[in-house]
Length: 92
Image (cartoon, rainbow, N blue to C red; front, side, top):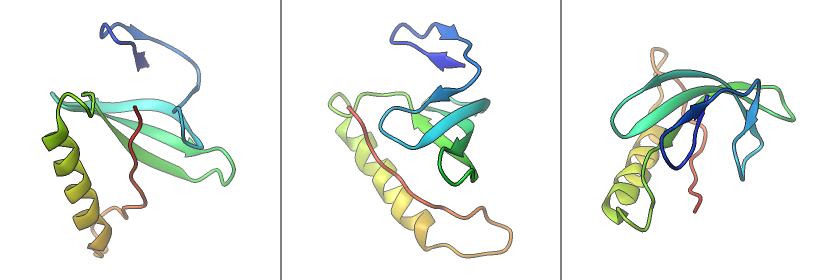
């Protein structure tokens, strides 16, 4: 499932996440500010979870800062019961 600017959902077999090497495979869940997808790296085949925020960076710069901080903290955590954090990025 992919959401367009109006919030309408459309189904695609595999949707490429723009600007990344990842293909979205399945929507895992959603909340008020983000959608989480099961995705696969196009070259390595690694299966990951990707969190896609529901806001435009220019309209909510404080949320972009909060997401960056969350990514930095998650990147430092190491525990056998936690999912490993790999990367984060932004797009316009």
